[in-house]
Amino acid sequence: MDVHRIVTEKMVFGGDCIAKIDGKTVFVPFTLPGETVDVAITSEFRDYARARIVSVVTPSPDRIQPVCPLYGTCGGCTLQHARSCCQTEIRSSILREAFSRAGIAVPCVSVVGGNAFGYRSRFQLHDGGLMRRESDAVVPVGHCAVAVPEVNEYFAGTPMERRPKGRVHVFGSERLASPCCGAPKVIVAQGDKKNACRQEGQGSRRWKTKKKAASLHGRYTGTVSVPGNHCTVRVGGKDLSFDVQGFFQSNLAVLEKSLPAITGGLSGHHALDMYAGSGTFSAFLADRFDHVTLVEHNRDAVVYAEENLAGTSHESFGVSGDVWTRFHAERCIQEHGPFDAALVDPPRSGMEPSVLRWLCESKIPRINSLSCDCATHARDAAFLVRAGYRLERLYLLDFYPQTCHIESLAMFTSGGLH
Image 1 (cartoon, rainbow, N blue to C red):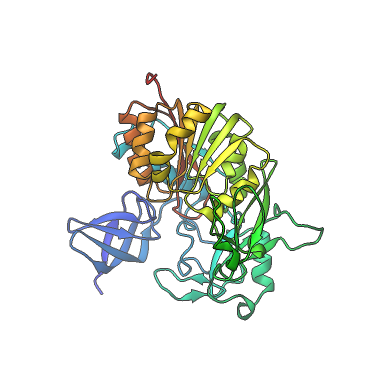
Image 2 (image 1 turned 60 degrees about the vertical axis):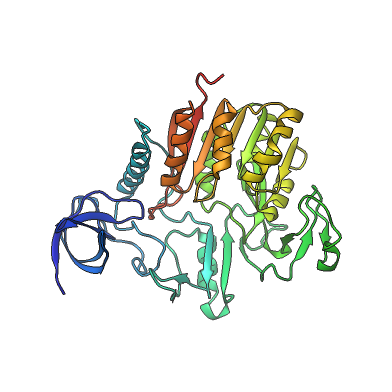
């Protein structure tokens, strides 16, 4: 085994630091910027290589001992070896650099954060455990340092052999709304959607059997829901419902702290929530706008959005952003007036090209853009800037301490577009 002594440079998206060996870029996990380490190459490609630490010769002053015995084995956390303040600065600098590479100057990054441990409510388990790093093997877990107490109670009280097999979602929180006192504060996803009820999502909550579903013609015909997977949490003074097997933010405390930045500065007559999910943000936009238009391709999530926005003036579209911009956008504007603000929260791949083009041409005065991938966020932001929008503020929404995961919020104004 050849051992190379290197000095690490910056950390990049993904959590590895880079260094050079004979002019080739090498990615080294579990290091920090400025450390002298001995490494061994684990895989080599034409333009780069990957390596593992053999020994840390000169550690960073921000290096600490990880608290979790599974750290480095479990595929979850990647930054437990760094002090919390260092982690936040690293995530901020990666976000700032992504926007800088896209040609957008960012003088500073505002941070909304919370607890470094004990914050995560949502887990995806595989045969009852967590996935091993860079492997399909399962790691048994009896306690997780980043899990909320309610999830750790489930881990401690439910042996691996009694946990459901396959891929199962678990959600736990003290904020979980329960029908009676003393009810469990953890929901474990029940079964799959193959044998689930189907529901017509015209604002109703009528359950339909598979046999009857074929005769339905509602906007959300064919949506599927498992009653046992229905979850409701209290966030920002509102009860928000979603399917445990669907997506919902895992860090409820930081979600609540982020709401003033995400929706608080927006108000007017008509708002657009693009990639709305189960209507989490629309529920708060509805307090500030006369009418809210929601667009979400996942019709299962739209049914929950209808529940979360019951009693408000809104319209939901269970279609892709591309379909909405081509066939529905103009009619929405004609019926409810121009949009005063848009909130956009696309998947990791970023906005659909047609949605991005439509937004660039829309002249909507305020656009708040959320993302879970800083590279695609910066790419899409550059199109808005070239179209005349001005980046007013950039936030790191620090939902996932101990990891390299970056959630960001970019706030744009139309400047002189009108």
